[in-house]
Amino acid sequence: MSEKKSEFAQTFLQTVGRPLKENVDLRGFSNFKIGGPADFFFEAETAAELKAAVRAARDVEVPFTIIGGGFNILFDDAGFRGLILKNSAKGLALADPGLRVKAASGTSTGELVDYALANGLEGLEFLAGIPGTVGGAVFGNAGAFGQCLGDFLEEALLLTRRGGEMRVSKDHFQFGYRHSKLKLVHDILMEATFRLRPGDRGKIRTKIAENLAVRAKKHPPQDTAYAGSFFKNPPLIDGAKTAAGYLLEQVGARDLKVGGAVVYPGHCNLLINADRATARDVLALAAELKERVRARFGIVLEEEVIFLPSTVSGF
Ligand SMILES: Cc1cc2nc3c(=O)[nH]c(=O)nc-3n(C[C@H](O)[C@H](O)[C@H](O)COP(=O)(O)OP(=O)(O)OC[C@H]3O[C@@H](n4cnc5c(N)ncnc54)[C@H](O)[C@@H]3O)c2cc1C
Image: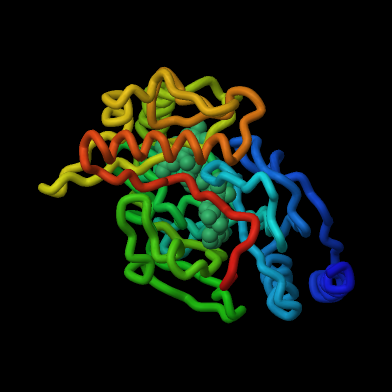
């Protein structure tokens, strides 16, 4: 195993031009502040580095996974047997005819919102305050206030698991509520182009401020260790959605905790790391909540937060 490790470290250095790190504690890379060590870790600063890192991992058959800001991910207590690729490849540009914004996937959603505002482009105000990168937001079709990012995506560049590049249009993603095809095939989003509308900067700024004020009232303090809503809002038989938080409150979630993982009393769909929680604590708490909702309402809640097990196949 250690032979394979050093073979990979060498191949990586030759292919990417910068060394990877070994045995990196993942706690600092997830807003849950949970996770064991990753065998290998690399922060790609450019698209070229990201591509080269994927090539190196494929050549030596090392499992890998990409992360953005870590705001929707729960790492395993055992860490990750393979390479964690943190995407910090940033960049924003206006695309012809000026109503489209092209973003590198490691750009933060905050930077994208600010850029649209600075260029008098309207549409992405709902995204203000949703933390993470463009890649993570497209992956999960991030949204708020009845809107989601997929509504604005026009085309994108993907790096497939096999290492090829593919230009795709919006239809490719099969966007749904917190869903995109990236969740099924695990291709990597390299860049995305969003079509926006011309707008008034003052009005855009006001809308952003209003949205941020609503969020500040609803969400826990900024330094809370969690990953946003834990479960998706489930669809009812008539297609409408009901709030997972409401169902959870009905089954007594408010008082529940396992180890250091607790239900946030102000919003039952937020599971927080209150005191040195482990992934095992969070998963046990989530399992208890799911079971209570299933037993009482016959509804099986689906996780929105992505749990990354320490060993993966097919990656
Ligand atoms: C305080 C708080 C508030 C939140 N509010 C909202 C909200 O209102 N609405 C909402 O939708 N979400 C919300 N979230 C969740 C989170 O912000 C979003 O899911 C965000 O889009 C995650 O982006 P990320 O870069 O942090 O992704 P990560 O957590 O790093 O990764 C999430 C998943 O995306 C995949 N991924 C990341 N980058 C790429 C890429 N380039 N290509 C392919 N796959 C990729 C990863 O492999 C992983 O499976 C909130 C979270 C927090 C902590």
